[in-house]
Length: 210
Image 1 (cartoon, rainbow, N blue to C red):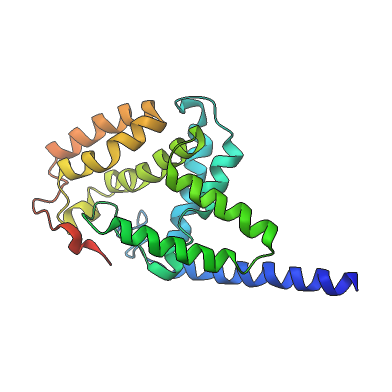
Image 2: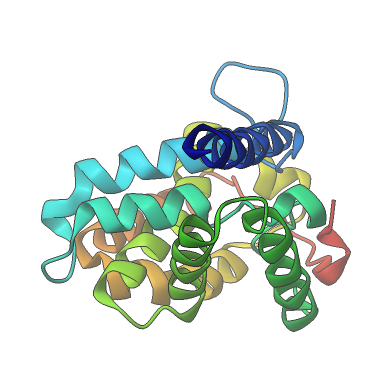
């Protein structure tokens, strides 16, 4: 009988992991370096987890990096159902977050309750941005699209009409709040990018949904 219970829980975990494979098909607005395609949300989550791990000494205060990484690995799972919306879109965020919450409740619900509760708590902590770990995780999340755009000569900024002012307004508070040294670095790089003409000139607002 013990085997029956173990088999059931094992199947729940496998079902969850296979459901996560769909995140590889959720495309974002930025392109991986050197590739003529858009990155996907699974790649993004992996990359920002490594970004946080290697920047941890620059966090505003002491953080539990394993906890940060766990948040970053689950923070975009709801996009399996909702898709990705470019970070600079204006309006509709309350509705989007409600849809993402419903999505993660469905997806985490595939797991045994002990795992489902833990992952949902991580997702909610990231969204609340109240703990030191959540602030640092959000800093990494906001920074990565900026870093890719800087490396791609402003590819998604130019293609989607994103202005310098819109980028700074969207990312400064979170990056500076969680990782001040990273913002100090990006502030200089963004000013250089503005001088190089790497930003869009037309604000196209909430039409930036995929």
